[in-house]
Length: 211
Image (tube, rainbow, N blue to C red; front, side, top):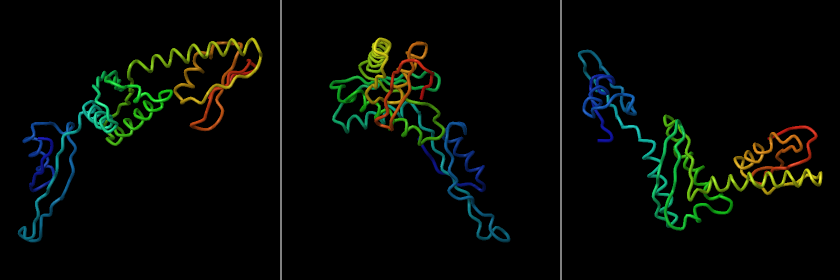
């Protein structure tokens, strides 16, 4: 039983009856008061019972799984959704055929899928968690690529003493570049441009700033 509506003399009595029938506690449900009821006039004439609807809170992990299955199915893909919860982060790994479609150019499709999934989770104000989506170990492979790129560009900047502009990247990817080079005293990094064309610039060290 996912939800139930009950009538009683008061809202509290109606709620208590619903919780008893569903065999749950109040922190496991969402209570909606449909009618606060009325005692009526003299001798109870015109009285009206209180009415409440009690619904089980959605299981956040299951909600994410179902959402991703629906979205990927709409894309013509059949995927297996694996999840791992660590603190307030739900790590999702998608497995199936043609996962390159989900990754997209430089991970743009994967990032978009992650974004809309977090929006869907955010509609439930009580589900305090963030969702990180990956497939075919793309996130780690992309991080390794960016870390290698950062070091290569830093060497070029130090040799030629000229600024180098990188291709537009997401905020997460720009952060990787900044982090890798933050302790290299011979170069500095900063970001320029507006989303989605914002990019990192690696320059010879003069002063240090990051964005």
